[in-house]
Length: 336
Image (cartoon, rainbow, N blue to C red; front, side, top):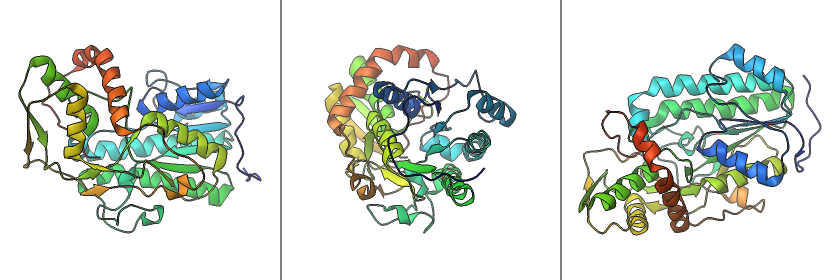
């Protein structure tokens, strides 16, 4: 395969566009955004239809579908406890998904691929806000280093394809995401959905005391998943470069401040206790988004508005999460 002459321009809305992981939090939001934009030949497959860790099956599926564009949003994800407890799983599954999809896309002639990583690729103690050039400049947060290494491998894979084949593949690094379709399970959920579920249950049960993990002092940035989806389309239309692009709001808050916003949204007025025996994770993680905003993109959802939107979705669907709960202990929240 040889490279193509490419100047960033709106991608063809009538071309076959495959969204890997289209039923997950990010993938489903991207699918909705592409539908809104008039993409007429969207393709995706559930895990039951296609196991992305099965290399032969992925190659056969991509040969049959023949996507011109691929958005790689599929990943094994989880909170701080899940990442710290099952690092080999997060490393192995994500490496296989990424390698299989990228190799199959290359084999079937995919012109444009967008790989979605995670802000945990950056060093634990990177200067804040974190610029794209901080990649591989320091030690990772140990509680999710295996997942981070897998995501870094994905970025290098995209860069390698660009160098060897001249294809305009790109990577985007979102900050902590939340919104409709998030994982609210007792085990494996991230900090914001875990808090929403805990505070909502406290209100429903009339509880007067809630215990949260850690000190509440770590600072985190949160981006509504619909804004992430919009940024993905914006990048596909406007960006071509080897550097991964940070996607976020450029604003952060403490976990304690986040808890206050969740309490306000749910109507919880009781006591909040912080279990300082539990890990905080990285002290601060705020992305420098000047590369993206310099191209003209801006998020549309404020955090207070986004939490209210997510809470409303959760309350509509909470019974499905209760029905799927296991007997495993509560995982708490992950400061991803």
